[in-house]
Length: 180
Image 1 (tube, rainbow, N blue to C red):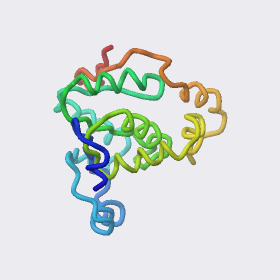
Image 2: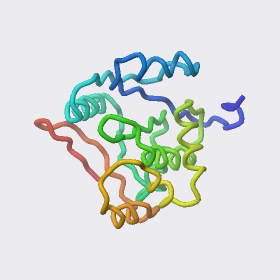
Image 3: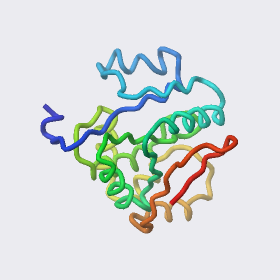
């Protein structure tokens, strides 16, 4: 019923990075919440943060288009995503391999601008974004990180300051090549 209410001109899909293999950190969410299996499984595993990032970048190589978005280029990244004409997957980096509320806020702001079917994760991100009165409040909801980042967070809370949408091009000798 919710999917019908949201409409469908395309689709927003769920991605499981596969960072957790433990039942209580992973499969329990699918089993107890009745969440359908993800549309994409990256199979990252439980390695170090750097190894997980490398695995995610390797998985990104299999995608037709990988766009890098934030609040700073919100409208531009949403327009670029719509122009691909295909499914859209919003992946959040998180913090040290875990969920990050500020990432979910940004993902929700992206999801609310895209039409199509939504996974439960996309709906949750959209609800998180809607629960904050401003981008700054959404980003300051995080519960991690060192003090002294207030000026950086204030800057990152600006919407549509940039029109550029960086794109992942390929991996070169273990480094991601990003192009504009």
